[in-house]
Image (spheres, helix red, strand yellow):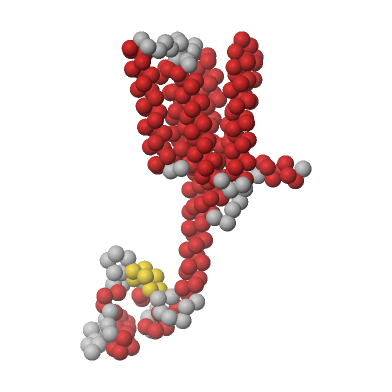
Length: 270
């Protein structure tokens, strides 16, 4: 039972980026397995004459997805992502070429879904590659159709189009959810890293401060406050250039600026 639960649970690795990608691919693969089963049930109920072809498609899809799940668990996350995207594209390409071409849902919806998945798993480069090969495939369909060298079937009826969209559209929702979750995780990790960084900086014995592009102080640690004699409220927002002095004159200048800040009376520092 433990092994079964582990198989359904997304794998974790030391590399956080690899773990995130594995989680995304894990959810996508299980979603595709569920879609394959629903597709087979639909064909079995309403299109018994094509059940054998559908069964072959479903069998191949299940074998490929299970194989990729195993690859992910063994750490071959990026390779599994590339194979999954390629298999997805091949499936919809074969389906479109053997059906209604650019008028089929495999081209109109399937390719779009593949582009989104490629973007989520691989990034912008993967999405652009999918866009290129998908448009190339669609362009070839148009050319061979106009030349009369390839005969495509008539587009499916409205009910078939609706059923397929009812199966594929939820996958888009899953992809959107995964994208949003990845953003939330990234922001949370960034906040944690920043908090750890701030903690380390605060515990330093040496003075430390940060400025924006204009030179205004945006952060300083306690050691910096001790060295200058200012409070954090007095320093934050002021420009660092007014305090930039040689180390040998630093104490004298800080005291002069502190007096000027509190009294409002200009004091000659040097």
